[in-house]
Length: 71
Picture 1 (cartoon, helix red, strand yellow):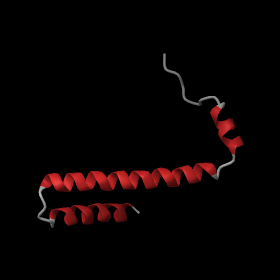
Picture 2 (cartoon, rainbow, N blue to C red):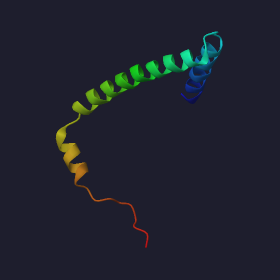
Picture 3 (tube, rainbow, N blue to C red):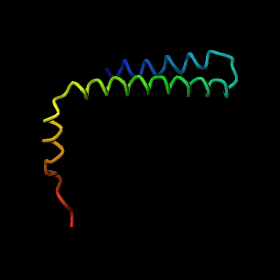
């Protein structure tokens, strides 16, 4: 999976660099694409959360932390 992620990133950078649009246009387009991807990711996460039983959230919400306190 790590290799696929790295390759995706490299492909995206190569695609951006291969275009002769001004850098500001590239920035604006990337910003728009980021917003689209972020919205889709949030939508998917909300669907995943809505499919989890509510009782599990309540149990986790009230659980005590296992993290050690440092003095």
